[in-house]
Image 1: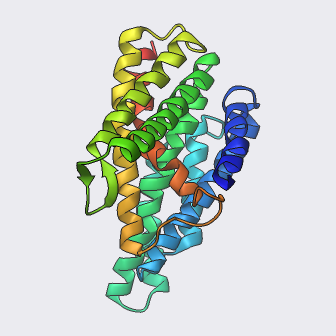
Image 2: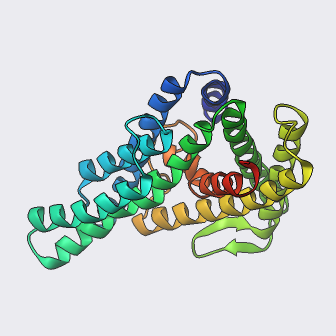
Length: 268
């Protein structure tokens, strides 16, 4: 029941932010998501003994989100990552006592900037696409990822026999992955028939497959982080769902995949 109540709040709030919220409101929510997911990622790293420089990493993550918003002052996301790659080692050498601790701080601080906030910031890049395409692209992404996760869960629970990645996530199965592919295809079909009718069917099919694969990969990557930390959830922020990072792990890889697919095949 707790899980359903949390979902009953998250689903309409997410739909509003994607389709109806003014862009500054959406961006404020994106900053909050970036800060919380970064904090949870640093919490996982700290649980396995690392000592990241958290505030510095979260700060660079927020600048990356701004860079993808396309708002002035314009910032190149690649320039933000380059600045982080320079500033974080300097801070690590200044704040840590010996070379092993310095290297640990460099790697553990930079990791969430690259694998969490930079990847998730592509969702902001999708929403920033001019016109109705921006909100439709982001909603397409969320529908495909959500239905992919739902299909994987229920099909895997009912029919799962063959383990997908037993070292990382023993409960995930190939049967569940097939259910996730069906869910992603269903999501792309709903988008084409409902709110994104101008999306050609061949592109909808290709997006469904690519987003599904990226969703599975993102889920496994976060599972590796949690297993290394020895925890079940990234936090207890969302009752019945774990942490915010647990809810958006698929978007970490699916967001960039859809963003660059749009740029390569749909932008013009």
